[in-house]
Image 1 (cartoon, protein in one colour):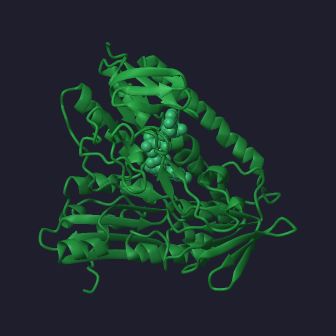
Image 2: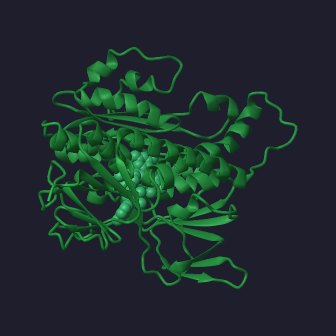
Image 3: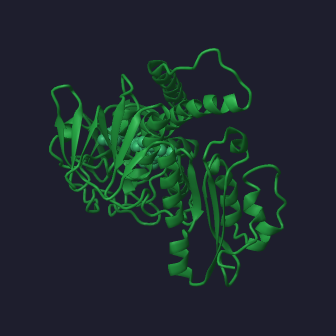
Amino acid sequence: MADEFDLFVIGAGSGGVRASRLAAAAGAKVGLAEEIRVGGTCVLRGCVPKKLLVIGSHYHDDFQDAASYGWRQAEAPELDWPALIRAKNTELDRLHGVYRQLLDKAGVEMFDGRAVIAGPHTVRMGDRSFQARHILVAVGGWPTLPPVPGIEHAITSNEALDLPELPKRIGIVGSGYIAVEFAGIFAALGVTVTQIFRADKLLRGFDEEVRSFLGEEMAKKGVHLMAGRKVREIVKRADGALDLALDDGGSVIVDTVLYATGRAPNTKALGLEAAGVRLAENGAVIVDAYSQSSVPSIHAIGDVTDRINLTPVAIAEAHCLVDTLFRGTPRGLSYENVPSAVFSQPPVSVVGLSEEEARSNLGEIDIYAAKFRPLKHSITGRDERTLMKLVVKRSDQKVVGAHMVGADAPEIIQGLAIAITMGATKQDFDRTIGIHPTAAEEFVTLREKRGD
Ligand code: FAD
């Protein structure tokens, strides 16, 4: 029987949408199944709604700072939370529509509903089944909740983006980037935030100095950080409040508790194992450098492979896959120097190696760093500081890491990521003229090695 599709994609998120469009543009006949809504996690439950709430929440500080610059407000501005959520959802609806249109225009055949794999070349949706030369699993991930008594009272990032009312007190469990970002949003909106986590610092895996610095800045903004603690039980009280009983005997009373302690690949009951696809212990699809699974006709990209779980990575993997399958130019993605950001308040952004990674992998390194109060706050008096840090390999002077905590860090690091990807040396940074007055110019005027 002739194949119905050259490529059948399961999941219309960041990776699946891009792979479908590119494959169709390369002349492939493409089918795409989506069980919730086209757009996926990033557009509907992740990057975009989260960033809109970060922007929305920042006005609190902006209104306060404006007064220092002479702006008088007749009345103190107040937040209309439902209006913010409505505005965000209107934008998400618009983006969802744009994605559907783009897929339509590209000639991708779309199917609403859950798809499962029924064989190396077969996808089933209810009582329909499709044959495909290649199947792409781009089903992403979903938040997981630990088996803590009372966990049914907890919410995840999915619900946190759509709360009908703003709580007065929130407990946030976890220390990863999602936990940190929501702590920033709710604190800026005036919610009393307690962040509880097992580690001694936020953001495991980041540069140690960045981790400490961010913790200090967040504490200054009123986030109550409870490191080295675990929630033992969640008890709902008669008044509706939640009592978070901690392993050290303490407790925290909140109105809402948000767990951001992990995500798992969406591979349950997807038919992968039966088709012979090898999965990792956490359910991630094991793939080679070309995103091919252990079954040659089944491929996987994005969060379901649990490589680097970021949208631009899922999109880049989609490009590589389409080049490999439909353009005759097989290629895999380089996972070196993938820049990333945490939209905390203040934000963090990094590219390359942390000081600790560089020290253990490269041997001798030089560190250049600065901590300062940004110009804006010389007038507001706000006690907010910025950290900038370069990690340099001593032998060839290559800049192998750039780290920043402070306003606009993600915008600044994106540019530096190009230089670092190109192999820029410290001397290349030094001979670059700064743009004055900016915070970013600090990256090209750092001259003193730490310890000198
Ligand atoms: P997804 O975007 O998750 O898409 C998978 C799609 O598959 C979903 O639409 C799902 O409904 C569908 N699906 C699943 N199973 C089936 C099935 N059986 N049949 C049909 N459809 C199915 N990344 C960044 O780069 N920057 C950020 O700032 C950022 N912020 C984030 C904030 C939050 C709160 C979260 C949760 C994530 C964030 N991410 C961010 C990560 C980013 O969202 C993901 O890396 C990205 O969405 C992965 O894309 P994907 O294509 O692998 O999967």
